[in-house]
Amino acid sequence: MDQVKNKLISADIISQYKMSKSDFTRVRKQSFHGTIVLIINFLTKSLPVEIQNFIGFIKQNIQEKEVKDFTTSAFVQYRNKIKPEVFKYLSDNLIQEFYTDNDESINLWNGFRLLAVDGSIVNLPDNKPLELIYGRTYNKSGTGVIQARASVLYDVLNKFVIDGCLSPLSTGERVLAINHLAFSKTRDLIIYDRGYPSFDLVYEHFERRIDFLMRVQTSFNKITREFYESRLESNIVKICPDKKTKHINKVYSKDTFQEVRLVRVKLPNGEIEILMSSLLDSQKYPNSIFKDLYFLRWGVETFYDELKNKIKAEHFSGYSNQSILQDFYAALFISNVQSLIVGEINNELALKSEKTKYQYKVNNNLSYGFMKNRIITLFFSDKPMEVIVSELKDLFKKHTIPIRPNRKFKRDIDKYKLRRRPKVLKNNKDAF
Image (cartoon, rainbow, N blue to C red):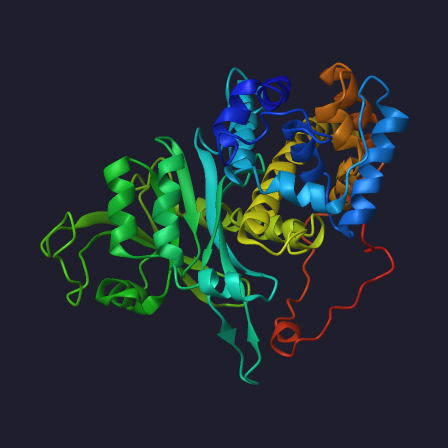
């Protein structure tokens, strides 16, 4: 993370990500660097409390840094001078640092970087400016809420957000999925749930030479219906654009086709799933691997749980769209920082667990709680980065939990429809 810290304190990042040329040209109580660090320090409480916590922590623990008191109003003015994309820039540098000259630590599946795309609904503060950007949605009772669509391209084995965005609900998941492809490359394998398959998305994958695995509904098209009824375990078929598709703005014609492989998967409850993939070689990729391969997509579902319930990404620290985007991108950056540190520890624990009944891992909920304030030391102190990271690792190692395989829990989806607050169990309290 040394590279990220060096980028954060450089003059280049200020000139690139300040809103106007006149911003941050004079010495103020709060710097560009300090404002960034404050935003990534889990702003879940009221701003006056968070600001006093920030100032007090620096004065008490980072004595080499001089910090002056500043008000909530001043902080809001400082953050309004910073483009939200600065957090994406820092996250991109962190990811690049991990994937460069780090082959032994990178987890792959059959030589592929295994990614997943998924979306989620994010609740936003209720005000007119945000409504104009994201729109208002209504439930059956007629209650209107302002919501955005979050979408991420996620490395499910290494637990990094490769790309993430926040868009109006009117922007479809498939459109966002195609946009994510700009951040993927050859030897990536991307997994999609059944809401994503379309000829457009399949075509884009083949054009960019990026492999995929998609769950498709039986009713996706005539070919998938015939495959389902055939009882074949696997078959290579040609899919074409839907006859109703307008080709005026398309780069392909109605006669364009792509060869894909359909695979039948039987679930424990007897239900049949149809998977569609670009992995055509049945010798190299037998039918038996696809069930477990698709299940690895669950990693992106787990990520959204952490994003909303552990990082508390919906607890926004401001009401403007600029603040919303800053908090959202900052949350993705924090998630990647945590994954980098915890991933190294979990690899060590896996080696040590060979002689124990269970394999152990870091308690993710507590790890985010321990990072509160310590992230200030990580990116604001002059103390060597490796020393701070080592101290964090030692703390994380003291709070590990066993991995119990084959555990299953019934998914209660009705609690969301009925707007019931989920019951918080004794061992599932907030970490901060």
